[in-house]
Length: 479
Ligand code: PLP
Image (cartoon, rainbow, N blue to C red; front, side):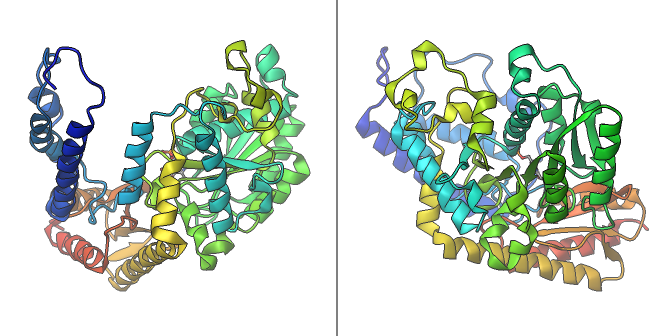
């Protein structure tokens, strides 16, 4: 690549470099189990290693690979490490990487059906496949009034759902006149912060977001929800939107959907269900009870980019009434009009999301579902559930520790029976060891350690070694 005028695609060179890249990725994955999980670099280290300005002339591919090893890898927190137990999993997998590369190679812009029918129709079909595989209510299938769409994130999904709810509640006035206030939204005190962000962006206002009380297991209390809705109505507000969660971020609490759904149905509120990580567990028949009541929801979101071997970004948003969503987000400038759209014969996903442009994300699901099969995906999820249950049992049997929430799926919330400062120190000790990475939350006002099992390569030996490391680190707490 030495000529002045670049050749964007040189087939021979591309194939050679792809082989090199494949070898580099294979070697990275081979090294992963031994790399310090949490990056150990200091702030500014990466920028200090980079040249101050872009190169004037073409550099060899080898130089880039060398700098990946020299600059990038040491400054990574290795999300794909089998010893990564923090936050939530952000699964990658070979089929998903291949499809991601293809998406880039095809360079498709799927804003309209017309701009690449395969991009739209494969997406609709994959969302239907997943809905069926998870036994989601039929109202979310594209064969009826509903359907699914891929968003970049659960945060975008809840924002789109809230905008649809706002427009439904204002009869479309929000978009036409400018939203003039008065609506209220509800989520438990444990709902994800993306709900707060959505009410900010949608103009509802944070003060109009009610935090509903939770029970001893951190699940939303429906009596408090009903009471807050009634109080708001009495005070002249218009209750419009509830976000329930299956699998809260802090402790994987599952809100009681049937009771919440009935309240929303009777009071005419939009119910959105956020199952960002836990939603993948709906592939398992034995976990479906957590999703009972979903048929009462207007929208539902889960993230294959968390726990379904599909790399970020790939968030599924389902709606029971797709017209409610498109009514809120549709725009139709002259330069995008076309016969297929005008005939109402196609879905145009630009009307289901905030941006106009969109890339070919459905390829990832297609590759992942076909290469692993539902049987393979279920087997992996079950392995994670077993490992989390085993860890929960070890912790429960060790009197120095306590479980802080039930181990419902793949998250174990626990603490050393001591002060917050000791738990913070314990967390630092294990994370600084580089051998594993766990994160924390605050539950009942206490610092709680979160151990989330969900990486593709995590096995019994990794969880066992991680627990030994944690249990051993207690001896260094200087108690
Ligand atoms: N909802 C829940 C319950 C989550 O746990 C998370 C991520 O941690 C999110 C929403 C946000 O996900 P995203 O990064 O896809 O916006």
